[in-house]
Length: 243
Image 1 (cartoon, rainbow, N blue to C red):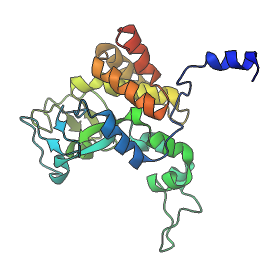
Image 2 (image 1 turned 135 degrees about the vertical axis):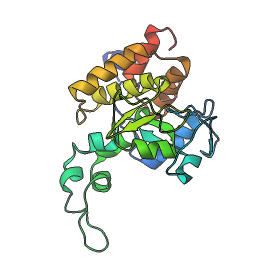
Image 3 (image 1 turned 90 degrees about the vertical axis):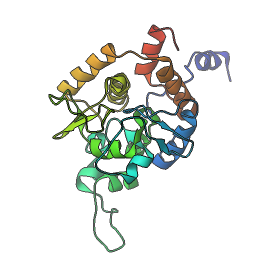
C-alpha cells in the first residue's frame, strides 16, 4: 500500500458510518443492549430498575390497569416507532411476492419488511433508537407520536407517562433522550423524515433537556458494538465536555 493511501486511511474517523450497517437482527440487538445497560439498568420512561434477565423492579407508586403481565419485564422500545419508518418501505405498505405464509395467504407490514428488506432490518435493529421500557408502558405507547397533552393525568401512577387519543406525553426526564433519538434517525436514514411539527418539538426538547453522563456513556457503548456514532448525542456531549 502506498503512502498516499495510508495517509487517507489514517484520517478516517473510527466511526465514519452514519447509520447501522453491522447488525440486521433485532433479537441480537436486544441481547447486546443488556450488556450496554449492565452498569445502569434503568427504563426510559419510568426510571424503573431491572435485573440482568430484564425483570422489572417496580418503582414506588407505579400502577397500570392493563397489560399486567407485561409490567413485570422490560421490552426494547423503538423510540421512533418501527411503523413510522416502516411505512416508507413498499414491503410494509403493499407486501411482496415472497411474503406468503404456510397457508398461501399474502401478508404485508412489519413482518414482510423484515423478511424482504435489509435496509429496514438495519433500521429496526439500530440500538441508538432502542431503549428499555416497562412492557406495559411500551404496550400503551404503541406507535403513537409524542406531543404535549392538555391532560394532567398520568396513566401509570407516579410515572408521569400520559396517553391520550393517538398521542403520548413522556416524563420530562425522558424527553431529551427521545428528542436526540428522533433527530438521529432523521439525520441517518433517508427513508425516515419527521413532520414539521415533530421536528419542532424534538428540537425544542433537545435544547431544554441536555445530555448527562449516562446518555453519553450509553452512546459510546453502542457505537463500540454497532460501529457508528449517534452524531447528535456525540456533538451535545462534546459541547458539554462529557464525551
